Image (cartoon, rainbow over all chains, first blue to last red; front, top):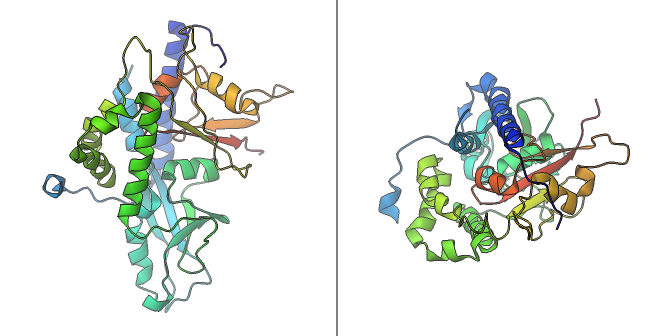
Length: 52
Length: 275
C-alpha cells in the first residue's frame, strides 16, 4: 500500500473547510429553487417501537 | 468552524429535485403529467417512489401496469444503489431537476434486480451494513447488537429519522485509538465507462508505519487515472454525495462522515465535463 506524508494542521483545516463549503453549495444548488417540490418521505411519527 | 456532526446532518438531509415522466410508449387512458419529488440522497428509489406509482396509476389500466422501473437517458437505474450515488454517477453536471423516465413494461431483466417489496430493500441494506462491519470490526459490532437495533437502523432510514438511525449507527463507527481507525475501509469506486460494476478491495486507513491514508492514496492504488494523467490535466471528477473532497482528506474521516447509511463510502469517478 502507498505511503502518505503526515497531514499538517493547515492541511486539515483546508480539507475540512472545503467539505463544509461544498456541502453548503450543494444544498443551495440542489434544494433552494425546488422547495415547492413534494417530499418523497412524509415526516410522521412512526410507532416503530411497537413493531419490534 | 462548523462541527463535524453537521456534516452527518448535511449528508443525511441531502435531496435531489426530480421530475418523473411516463415513458412515451406506455398505454394510458389520458395524458399523464410529470410528477415532481425531492428524493433523499441516502435512500433507495423503490423505497421512496410510491407516490410516483400512484400518480401514474390514475391514468393507466391495472393490466397495463407491470413492475415499475426507472431509467435516465437510456440507463436503467439500479434500485439497490443509493439515490445519491445514481445521481452522481449518471447525472452530475446536468441541469436540475433530474429527469427520470418511468416504465411499467419491458422490465430490463439483464440490468435490474426485481424489487417486489420493502423487505427486499431491507434485506439488501442490512446485508451491506453487515459486510461493512466485517471489514471494519470483523463483524463484531453488528453481531453483538440486538435484533431491535438492526430494526432501528432500517426504520431510521425508511422513515427519514436521523436521530433514530444515528443512535445505533454511531456504534458501527467506533474504533480504538491505538488502532487509529477501522480494520479496513468499506468503499466502492464506480465509473460509467467500465463493464465492471465497481472496484472494491481491502484497504487500511493507516499504513503499517501508522501514517494516515488519504483519499488520494486510495485512488492512486485503485484507479490511478483519477488522480494523475500524462499531460497533468485533470480528466476525472471524484464525487461523493455531490461534492469533490480534496485528495488530502483522510480516508478514516471520510468513512466516518461521508459513508452512506449502508456504511459504505460510495465514490463516483466521472469524466470531466467537456464544455
